[in-house]
Length: 334
Image (cartoon, rainbow, N blue to C red; front, side):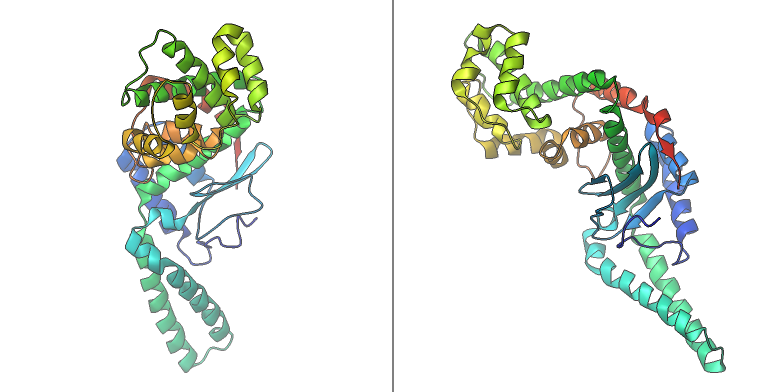
């Protein structure tokens, strides 16, 4: 089953084995970890693909970095958009190189229907040209970045599975705890209000922020739940503010400023998280909870592609452990 119309057909180009061999070599250099153990299984089943400029309408998830093909409990493909595993200079030429490789393949098929001295020479010339393009393609890939992205996509698969399971509350609570730690750490860069109730307001606001960004609940519904968690008196300031549903990370600054906890503009707050934890984390928060969890766990590992910094390693380890418990419930098969 094709993962996408824009998928690079490594098998047809005759480079699938070389591609997987290069991935294995990168994994060996990284050393053993949860990430590399998962990747070994996916390499054995040959479900890792490359695409270019791809958004796959048949996938359960199309992320910034690639697509996921999963039906029920069966994961049959993870495809990374190749441009994220290339240097900026290689990105500008990769599309034309892939087109050229496909044209050479078609030309080889056409010429091979009639074998003559002339056609043999032409085929030999095309083979040499193809070999050069193939070597250029394989040599230009950053396989360490590929490993990082494939693992992040797999974590999204597990998160989607976990949130359909009865034990999803534990994962939700672990993600919430990590998010709270991230906000607290970020707010160390600001001068907080020194009134006695500021700490309680911050706790309530953070609960509201998490639910608003990562659940379908509207503002009134979230506030009603908070009244059950805290006292009505504690939550009254939020009722008075009448906050709308938050849509992006910068909206957090608006709410915290209105609640007299900090004084910040959305742009300033966004820049602060980029400096503190990396731009990718801010982007994931603007996407969905699955993306945030996947990205937050990926921050554990040194990665050039994700530009991330550790938030709280203990909480990130707990989140990863909870998530990997669902690995046995996913069938990895081409």
